[in-house]
Image (cartoon, rainbow over all chains, first blue to last red; front, top):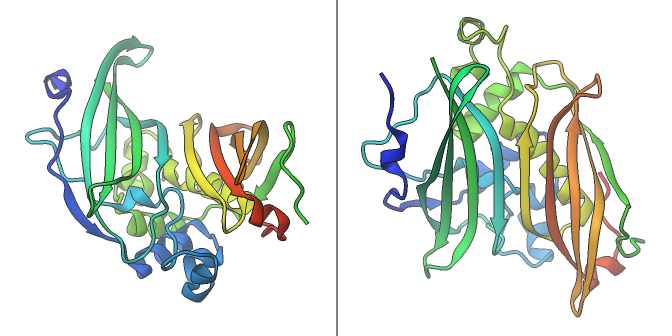
Length: 145
Length: 147
């Protein structure tokens, strides 16, 4: 069965409320093996001008961005092609953020491995005041059998 | 004492300890990415990968550490992007490096553009990318945190 990804271009999820927790930041830093005290020591982070421990640059991948209605990526045959982040303000523990995702673009190509579909998704992270704090773009490549 | 960043200056290397399967389980839990190709050998073998492979975002996280170690605690990341080029397997030793490609002096500090990459133990590039960060003058005068 061919999945018609193109039909979902422009569609977005409803924003999901995410609370940034200290423990989640520490577990993430631990998985990376990163001992930066900004992630571990709240007093140190405060002394550097942050309200609490700081999220590492790729931490926003842990957020729940909701789902685009009726759109589901297959679990198999997906390759993470590229990933970008644009930062507007640091994310720290205690932040309450609203996260959503949108399918920006679908491109199809016939490759060595058969049909390849390039899906570009954009994730937006806003704070309670509605200010954009961070945006991500993710390209996933789906190789159809 | 950290002097101003200069074009051509190298960043790193940050040499990470070998990637372990436990680390992939930890990363799965911490990130919420439970795709079994990263944690279940039988599944990864059936998918033709020969065994579990690291999350691409784990490697990007390593490169993120290179950047945050470089810019110090008051540095602010503005953008960071990578392309994933090769799979990373348990046991691989990832080395992250970079190079300053552009520097802009502004009233409050320096904006630094750089290219970044990570290689595995055979020298094969696993990710390549670029980043822009800002370092305030106050931080440039202080000692930088080294990796």
